[in-house]
Length: 159
Image (tube, rainbow, N blue to C red; front, side):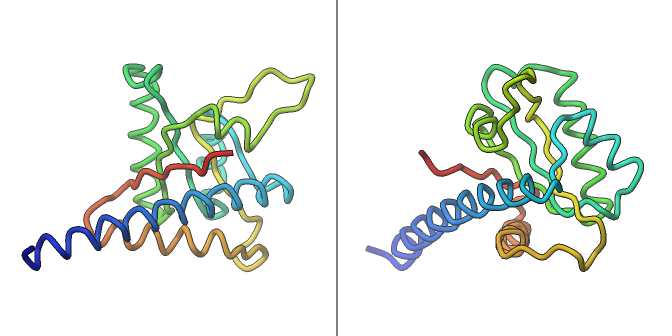
């Protein structure tokens, strides 16, 4: 076994651990943000928040699955949201499990299911809301950018 093969195995294991840890942190963050009413759910709702007060956005989640991969309008929205997040130094991740995200953020019994293609974690002011899951996800995004993965994909933990 060469050094490169050995290092590759370590990197694959470390990447898997990072991904699992990030998935758990994302779930914790979304649950916490929902409880504190700091979660905006929906592509259009998110665009409105970004337009009105971009400084309050702390984190962005884009979600899709095979059913929506060919939805051109949604992909255009994603491109614009990504560009906005890059311009405003907002950490952003992708998730490929819409159903699991919908379970996490839930919807009221009287409401129709929410559009979870885009979710923003907001903060009323810069210092008012600190969350360890948000900090872990920020570190995960920074590490991903260091290896040129600009919008990392996170796998959510199974229930």
